[in-house]
Image (cartoon, rainbow, N blue to C red; front, side, top):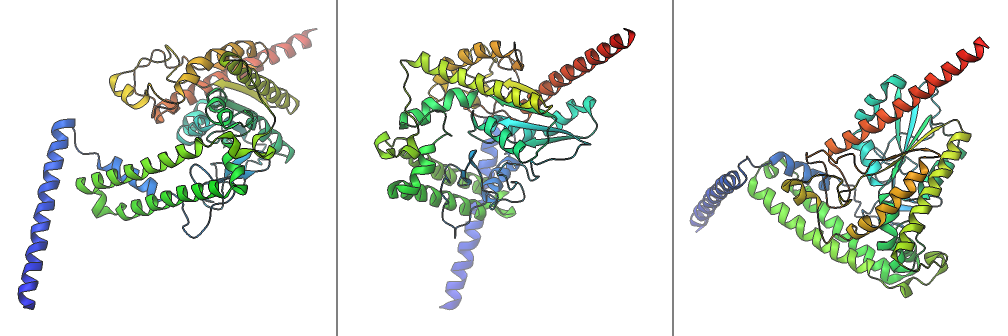
Length: 435
């Protein structure tokens, strides 16, 4: 009886192995025929590894303010930062995606701080070398400090700079890359929830979960889903699994299921009505507008005012300030799109699209006025003649190549300005000596 069972077991295992090999062969050949390329094992391994190595601690509860990626925590001045305790190897104690402290005192380096949202953070993360290289004419030792974080919008950049300067941080140059979050996030997130538009994004969720049990429960469920997704990816993050076409596709389908569940739960949180957030600490001051045009005009003017304040602060501290309006794919005429990039970057129903179309003209108009007083550069048309695939999603973000193009252009503009000022300064000294 035992021998018969053993034979059946061995036969079953051999049969399963051959079925697996046949499926692998069929899927590999099918992919090659349809895509005219080999199956991208490396891409899938990287995707699995990113989810698998995301730092979730199943034994810890969410801290107040932890929403979105499960890493954000409330900050008394910035609104929120990343929780450095979860990822100390890449997050500084000040909560930015930069392991070094932003309190720099190295007078031998050209210290450069970058402000903004996720777009600016991606420049620091994916195109730092390109930015440093483009600034080499200004100094051989260039230090880039990332003070940007996903969802940041004015006045957060203004407050961050003030706070760090109060702690004796020293910067030679401040770069601010923003505009998108300022014009898009308030109409989509804060205002529909009855929250003051100039409060940090999703402030109602960050604060209300301290008081409202139902919100805390929903956020806890969201965190459980993310933990399960993380654990699933850890299982597939093995060489013998991630080198299989079948296993990669199985993981992709299972991961997509988790992502849809996360999305649906997030939508439920976003649809909570204003009466659910009645406390003044959640809603902030009253805010009203007569129509969409007046709203976008108000948001753009506030954005410009904050930039002027940053410029004044920088000048009083002998810092050069440069402000850049970030590009976006939904700005009309900003980039020629191939069918491949359109599939990656364009979603006609995207929740941010309408605000970009309606709001960016106001940003560009305010930017024209800013040019009269500060070093402002409108980057919305930087890709107007570039047909390469540069956008990486349907929101606003760029791939590595796109980030490097932005970084090099920023470096060129800063270098040209500084060298021009130095030349004029030396010329002025020479003339004064002649007199």
